[in-house]
Length: 278
Image (tube, rainbow, N blue to C red; front, top):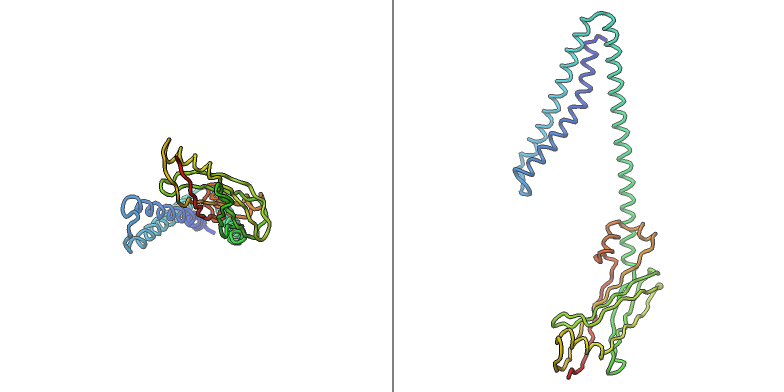
């Protein structure tokens, strides 16, 4: 093969590679500039897409043409050189072709590995999403809240819990009066629940509620008859094992820490009270 053709081929293959990179960078820059300075989040004109991609194609074609032209010029110059330089130039041209082939092979291998890894990660993510959806259905939840009066001085909230997931849970409750949203009682308890239905009781002492009402709502001495329904807000949170944390999406582990996960079961009950503050 004549050196002119050899180096034209070298310029073409390297121009093709560098042209593809230049075209991609041009399109990315044009799209970014259009979003930042021209159109933003508004609806873009229909002609923007063809113009941007056409500009990228022109830049890539220019780089390819430049590579072929440079290869022809260099090959022509080598053909007029002494024979020793001529042989060295031929070997150099073949090395450049082999290097180009190696670069393409590395790029193809890297793309293939990335695609396989991405596919595997997608499969794992899909499995975690499915497992999480099933977990939400299996975890215990508060089906109903029953309020009973053991005596005039106490109220008992009986929580009926049901679910298929056995393990540790944390039960949190807040009792407040509705008018001023003032918290009069709150607490937390760790539970170990088994599959099926279980009941948990929370007892409220009216004498304690009366004193807290005097201090937190009336803010000191005062006389009033309190006869209203206090609101009992309940949250039941599963305490995940290490295996369960690995089986659900990472964002859901974070959401659970923030208290904003679908795994948290909530319920509201009404506690009727009647007491007099003299």
